[in-house]
Image 1 (cartoon, rainbow, N blue to C red):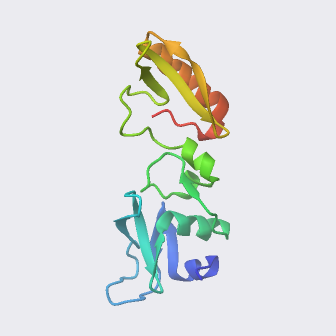
Image 2 (spheres, rainbow, N blue to C red; image 1 turned 180 degrees about the horizontal axis):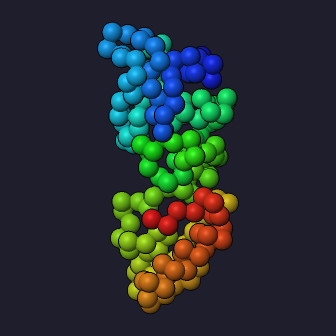
Length: 164
């Protein structure tokens, strides 16, 4: 089991990166940045480190290194999965993590939480709040719909609102 003490024995933390303090294998050089980029089961790319035959995501290890515990989920506040600076990481619930997600590739409006309603040919603003879908109106103007969506995310998603 990986612990904060083990991490501090093996690594130094420098600007969002874990740097090897010991040579655990021939290919590892003391002072080199630990990890490699790898895709997870969902196709998301993260930095990973192998310890005792098990792969760990670097952002989770950085969180443990600084906070002494490993939460169920660690969120990258700015959405950049390679920015593992401790000030960019936070312990979140599944729903908080989902609020901070980028907009989907299937998005056709270019605005998060806004879609073209076919029957009225208007831009509909819709957000999920506490697991339920809520409509914030339909608008002729996409720019106005985007502004309404941004304000709704700020109000209902707070610190977890992401606008892009």
